[in-house]
Image (cartoon, rainbow, N blue to C red; front, top):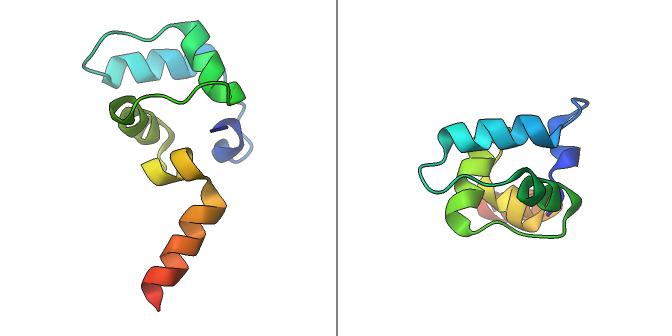
Length: 80
């Protein structure tokens, strides 16, 4: 998962995402290092964290998990 391309021109800074995520997440806070690994595609957050991350980024969770192309393909399939 690489989320840095999802922000349409806005630079995604790990420290900003860490703060936003931790203010919304009800569990144990995540570290800056964990957020950096998410952004570089080196780690995938758990499903519950993925939901919160999607909310922070204002995207659907499946876009984070599978990518925008797959999400678009699913939407086209649903429309048929």
